Length: 376
Image (tube, rainbow, N blue to C red; front, side):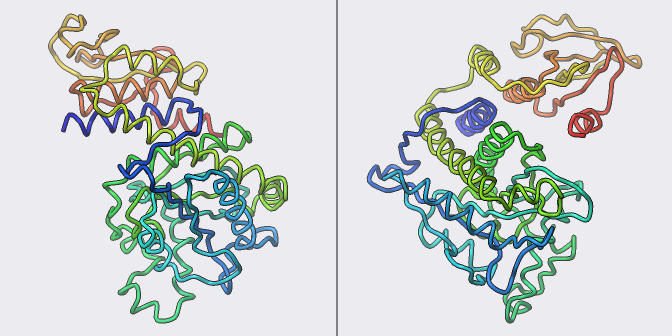
């Protein structure tokens, strides 16, 4: 169990820390085996995808997918497999199994988003159920291609892509690969957001049928909103497609390097606070001006000295009295990426239920509203 926790934390550290270099040692022990990437261009053939601003999603994602593949194929230790290379219709239920059949290391599905407003930005998804329900609409739109397939009622055993209950019924068959999927999604997402200066809609989970049946780390990338009057033309442009393809390819190459590093380092018995501090120093800053984030460890009627020995070795613990209780906080920073690392470390040290809180001045604010205000 300790070994699993160590690897999980290492993945989180690497997802938030810039990665450089592209050498790779296979996650499997067969050094002669290539790193197999399955690229899935969404939609195709009779399924045009969304038609925001008159564009064809199926054509855009195919072009970007082929460009990603071409960049990856320059590396002799990578093998690229495509679910489609032309304008053909591929049943949704067949796409994931293609990756299983070739024993792929990762599966990346590429799409474009749409909305009835002027929403915009880049989002990357892993398979899962978003309990808030806010990501169900995106999943429903991508899953509705099922209705274009012959005998879909028999093939999908009564699955209704427009039903939240049915979507939630897609259990997380990918649970074993969730950490790696989040890592891959984060690297792709960060590349696009930081290097292309696109709006960050973050890495999220949603119940996509195309991801649920692939037995390896799998992500779905939404390149942007074709329905947005500025973003749609960019995504459709030759320049936009090339830039997006480059950043997706680089994200995959970074993932390949990161998995190698994680494998090499996974023999260490535990993460130390010095390693956490070093990771924090090199982590990309995500600052919220005027906000102080803290990790709440506990609330108690008992007044404790904040020395490390009382808090499982954690330093920088502060105590305040709120509503008749003493509350104990670890860390204080305006950098959200830094506080996420500190929360993860606190969980590893024995505070599994700790959580992040936000303050403006001395007033506690709802974290979701603070984060949302930065995205506007």
